[in-house]
Length: 282
Image (tube, rainbow, N blue to C red; front, side):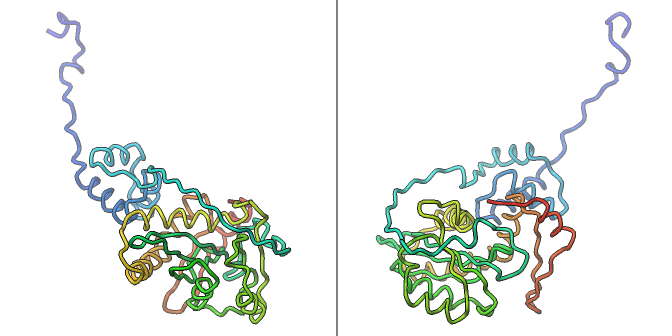
């Protein structure tokens, strides 16, 4: 019969393989998407699943996300025109875009951003350690001023005497005598970005982008107390999970494990060597 029909025996006996049940994979992808506060796309989800020992292609993750209607909040564009007065101080850019640091508290950076609370604009301040992108201190308030920055400093648990460089942009809220006295007391060198150059503070700018997409745009805040409580939860999530994934996504080769009982930082020496060779700059 095969000879008459011009078919090979292999084709005659061929049976299509049944489709694999992907329900478990779909649940894992959906779980990781929710865990990321609906922010991760296929690339970040693939990296996160790889850390859990689950190997799956980006194409399959994209297909699962499309079928389930899972859309990363990073795909939505947001625009806002913002004008501010520039700090004309003669302080130089000591940091000089050297964002890769070998030791904790060697250099910390900060910035402020706006958050809608009820019908008014409120503000959030983060202080980041460039060593591992950990949020050391944070604050929120109704006014964009030096008081907000000092409040963020007050929440830093590590000794401020170990901080070497404090870098900011040229916002007027950082041009304040109280902040100058604080830096002088703990012998911290001040560093300012060049005028009109946001790239000099790229790590802080990038972190605030993550804050808005992963946190601010996901919720509605009716009171400042609600914002402060939810911000505490976000900072805790960022320091335990978010910042490590962001480091890998931004092609940083540094991985940090924090032992929360002994408050010690452990860094893999071979990974650190690769990081130095990469000479990464944001």
